[in-house]
Length: 127
Image (cartoon, rainbow, N blue to C red; front, side, top):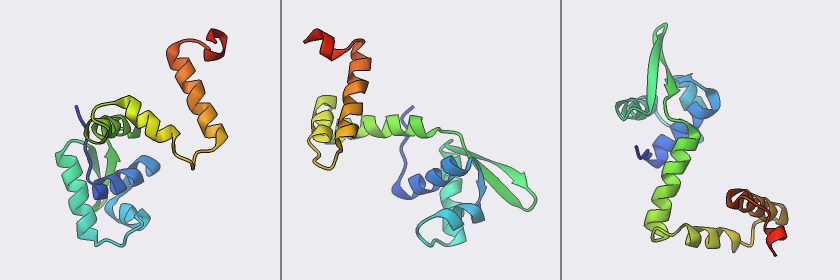
């Protein structure tokens, strides 16, 4: 199942992933943008209709919790990004990432380690 979020939905999901669960008021407090209570409620209801969150009654309020993990959402978003922006080529995405001058040497080394792990060996030994 492809998981797709609007920017606003992703903001709300970010709060739920960090908090584990939250009421509408708690989500609203933690968002960077000042949104009306009803706007946050509408976003949460939409997410619930899509099957991405669930709620349980807590007194007079509802407590919402994520049903979709951050990793699953990230994988889905990355697949869409590769398909739409990088013409379906993960290699083009990787090329864009490693050519970013803002990456530190440590970040580049970690990327190399991840690639070596994925290849099932040490690239140094193969040279």
